[in-house]
Length: 224
Image (cartoon, rainbow, N blue to C red; front, side, top):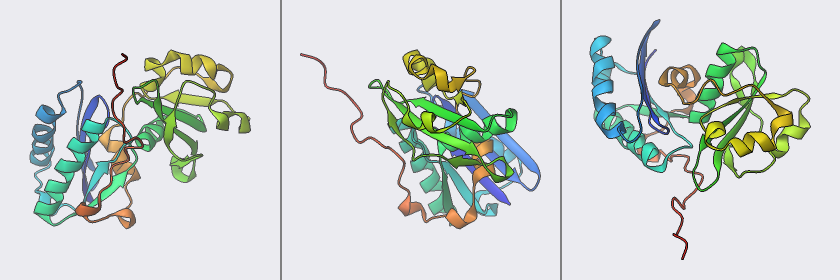
């Protein structure tokens, strides 16, 4: 397997290339610098692996949900690379990638991933540990306001938390305190975990990419 993964849906700009058992990775957590960081990082991992785009089986795209502009950056770059090299794209949930890293690092069986969606909301993903420690969705990813997360009441075990959204909106944690445990240690998706979740059977043509925006409205009107 030779796959290149990228994600700019969050504050993190992350790239990874797997060829056989070797993993080459770059990861930077810098706001508003994705357009400057992404292409040099891609070139670096390809050079380090001594690989060309045409050597790859597919490109793996962190498909959000997350920053509207960030997702457009990654999707546009992935499409350009895929069209140029005749490759397909495997879209992977950026929230699920965070959950996969949590399951690898801890013994928790349930995790709630929340990323900042602005407008007093988070992008929420709820996952259970599945076969091979893969994250299995408990509910569809969605926008969540500062209120009780209804699915929590249906589970006996507490949920671990991950994602920067819990830090951005501490009131969400306070409202749901009886169902969650710990502090978020994994804040942003890493491209290596996109690779781990990529399944070639889900590969699509570059023209068919549809980033998981979840919200079409991306700004609030100023109060008058």
